[in-house]
Length: 241
Image (tube, rainbow, N blue to C red):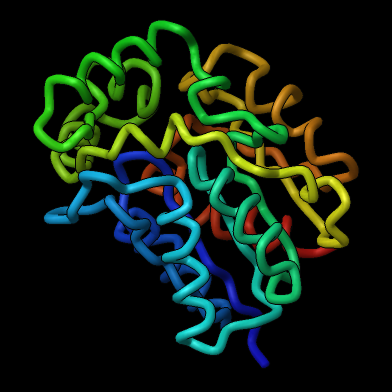
């Protein structure tokens, strides 16, 4: 059976964000699935969507496609979804890979890991929307998330982002069983990532994994767009012991 990778996107993205990485992995003979999380992507219903809805959507894909022994790859916010999927269905997961991802402790919410100014801004934007959603402003996206891309590419990608239901960042996650999971884990660290304060992704979040394999690469937060071939190679490297 071919190795199966399930790629989980981050905030404001959709499964489309993995297109070039997925193509590289498929070229190497891997089976790849890149679902769009509940409440994300163009035209999605966002009102009332919770973090558990995002988790349930991924589990539904695994069950509908008959997938097991999968490698879950979570980018940014997607790391928290990987955590919860693995807690709910460890029997389906061969390995977890976190790509500059948020990794929460039991009872935390995503907002607990973000700078206070981000939390306040996202709350303000979501209150002003009709469905409790918010979209990252262009200036933050350009300066902190994709500062290493040419501006035309950064603008083109920002135009494809979709508002995210802010409730997913406020739900507190039951992760008591996460540390005890007998599932190998890896962390891919992007050296020029500026999306969060220096040291947030590694070593602060990565250290919450316990024993893990560390893989490093150059690039900012959005390496699936700026370095897709290199990222695919790093994912393959991270998927082995």
